[in-house]
Structures are given as structure tokens and as C-alpha cells.
Image 1 (cartoon, rainbow, N blue to C red):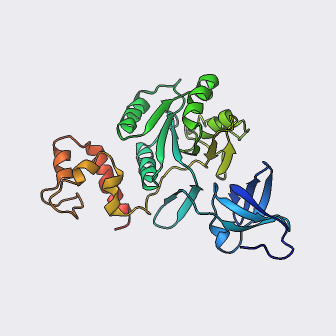
Image 2 (tube, rainbow, N blue to C red):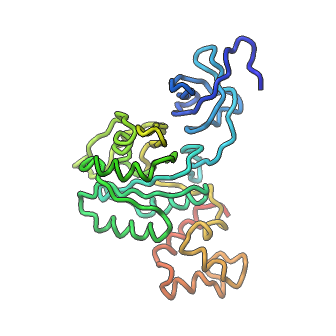
Image 3 (spheres, rainbow, N blue to C red):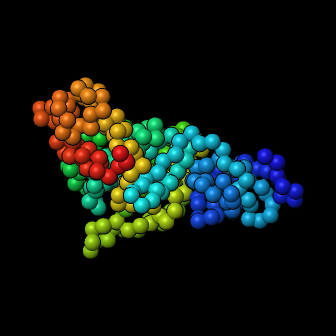
Length: 298
């Protein structure tokens, strides 16, 4: 597509933040500039590769390139795009504030649905981690790569371990508020993202990031996308029939049922139900599956 007359140069850029109809874009020379979206480009997301017109100011996003991946969360009302063109989902949790294991399970399903790898980071390991470690073991059994760090208490070791798993990757970080995502970004990307102490009165996290933001690693061979903390990872965009294939502990049994369209709820000769009764599938995981069936698309 040719640039309109008087529009200046057409430049390649990456969207590094989105603020309503405006974006921050990083140009090839490292400069960050403001750009305005228009037309079909209104759907651009953090991580998108775009073509911008250098004049007038602010720059104009003229087109968006095809994406290699797109991650988002959704509920029955709306969908929220998290980032585009990432190849790893980093799920950060900690012993405090209280974490939701369902959030972690949902994040892994979102990663599998987007066909990207999942990495789970257990942060704040200087605290009592008994319950968190049990969750981490289960997540590893579900196929996630797992690491344990203390980003604030032992930053040198955390930087070494996280640098290895983030290297040569564009990693989207997600997690509930207060888990330490911004601290990790500050450590690896050299940014000064605003962090706050955990509220001792409520024992809940405070939001420290207001928009998703793309940060290059200080090592120069990867990127981190920080996201605002949220408490619920909605999966309403996932079709109900796809759920068993997105849950590694259910998937092998779901292919052994008597009926090809078995929903694994109450059908006869269901291999999933049989595995639940025999303990081969964890009862809590199966209850989670039934809960998802009620909230996802038929």
C-alpha cells in the first residue's frame, strides 16, 4: 500500500503499548514515538509489527502485519487482547498474596489454545512455599516449564535463572496482582516500572501496571511484555469441544470414549469418567473441567 501524498516516510515499527486509540511504537533505530490507529489497524495490539507514516505528528499506523500468535482473555461480555507475536506465556505466582490455582490452570489452557509454550515462575520463594510448591509440581506434570526465584530478595540468582528461560523469546507475563511481575521486568529489562508493597491490611496485591507494555531485555536477545494484574483468566473464547484436547491430563482418555462426540459429563462408556473414578484423573481437575464447560462456547 502506497503512502498518501504528504504523509512522509513509511517506516516499520513495533507496537510497545496501547492507550485507547493511540499507541507507542518502537522504530527500527530504537526510538519510541506516538502513533494513531485508523481503519482496519484499530485492532492492533502490543507486539504487533506495523507500518507507520512518519508525518504528520503523531504518526499514523497505516497497516498491521500478519501475526504469528495472539493471546487474549474473555468473559461472557467482552474479550481483552493481551499481546501479539509472542512465543511464550510466562505465568507468575507467589505464596503471597493468596494465589488462585484455577488462574494458573486457565493460563495454561490459554497458552495451548494459542499454540505457544507455557512457563510458570514461582516468585518469592523466601516465604512459606509448601502450598505453592505443590501447585508447581502439578503444573510441571501438565507440561509447563517451571522455575523458582526470589526476584526481590535474591536478584542476582533470579536474573541468572530467568535470563536463561527468557533468552531469545518474546514472553508475555501474566499473573494476579502483587505477584511480582513488574519486579521481574525491572530486573531483566532494566526498567523502572512502578512497584508497590503488598497491603498488610488486606493481604492483597495492588495494581502497579495500567497497560500492557513491551520491554526489550537488557541482554538484547529477547523481550518481556508486562500486563496489568487481573484476578480471573476468562476462557469464554475457547470452544467447549476443544477443552479436553487443551488439558493434557484429560486428553489421552478423551480419545478412548465410546462416542466420538462424548462431552465427558454423563455419557455411557466415557473413558474420562472412568479415569476420574479410578483416580487416574484428579477429581479437582475434573471438577474444574466441568466448571469450564459451563462458561465456554458450545
